[in-house]
Image (tube, rainbow, N blue to C red; front, side, top):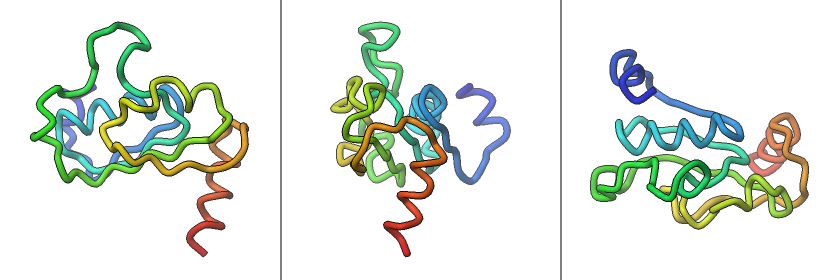
Length: 109
């Protein structure tokens, strides 16, 4: 996925759940800004080895938001390992991206 992103060079990447994890990993290797919703942190889900770029200076200052649900089991999984160390927490437990979109729209209106 990292190589595809480098080839396509999108302006922004996003994902929900596993897709959010993938978006975050790609962003950490390419510096492409983005956003992830209700995604697990990219360490320990598949392997104990970090999936993200371990050279944290490479993506320091990258504009990448992580939106998580307080009571969503997927959001709780390794939440301390996101590249953005300040995820935006939303109340509730619904994992669906449609409900998250409604909450974010309320937050910004």
